[in-house]
Length: 102
Image (cartoon, rainbow, N blue to C red; front, side):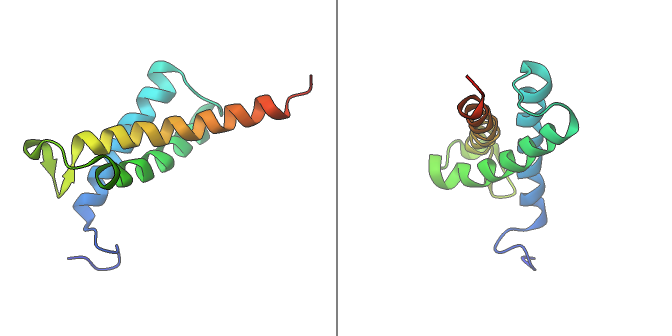
């Protein structure tokens, strides 16, 4: 059933959300790559990681049919989630350096 999710069913949404959560946990808490401390920074990474995971397969391609869940190719989705979560943090870190007093 595709009601209200613009061509995506709920199971696909959850797969993308799990990919985003994995990327956010690793970047925020395991590696410690953060701009905003605490739960707010984590939520920012989850949101941008979800968008990255959503764009992963269309941009990177459809890899490994055997690890496809709910129509989502996991490898490109995970790579996209990491790219999205990393990019949002790197962007804000760069903006902070540009705006910092010299």
